[in-house]
Length: 322
Image (tube, rainbow, N blue to C red; front, side, top):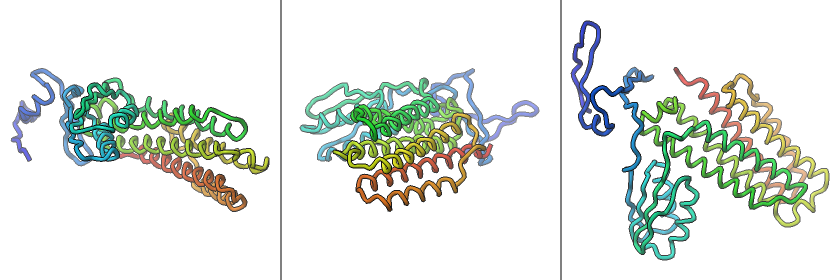
């Protein structure tokens, strides 16, 4: 821990000197503004108001002898940790196509160089243009779209590929949001840009993650409904009940989203309403033994659980100590 002496400055102020290495790292010079933030821990945080340069945040990874799954996990971790250049060193025969496929799941990522023992990936992102509210808004619109199209599958054919592609776009946005939040937790000036405390950033990270899970479960429902002859063998009454429950879950999501957009958690669901819905889901499962119905009901239950958790995160955000 670096200790500094408190220096008297004038009649009513005090000052300290700042480490030269920190000044250089943040590209500061005489006359620049810095932010001084009082934290909940009764301490002061000093931060540069300049957004960090991301041009030189690079990492080299040795992939020699690693499986494709290990490589993809490493890529995911480095992408989320905010690196702008990732170099994979080592023999890559038979792995390039799969690596390229996964890189395409990252927003703003491109493979710029490929040789027999080297793959260079650049992430062309600008933290100045990232807005977490925009990411949440964008993902919510896509989720509502795939929800509607999935319900429509009960009555008519929809292009399942369009639905799954929209689901992949949600996951891309989720990864971008998580990357931006991790970057903000490591750079105070970025957190200031977002106007969020570390605790609020944590809650927003959970919100974005839950949205990704909800989209994933909806896609799984769509794929289940799209199974051969599933809708054709359903009785009209059963299909109507299933459609009603799917619409109910969609209404829950829309209501929670409205709560977030209005930043008002006073209008909220009571726990008993969720409990009653889960009871109706269980009852529906008990009287329908079709394996696909059982699967869909379970996914609806999981979506409802994530919606509840989303609501709890918003309540927590509303009550963050100021």
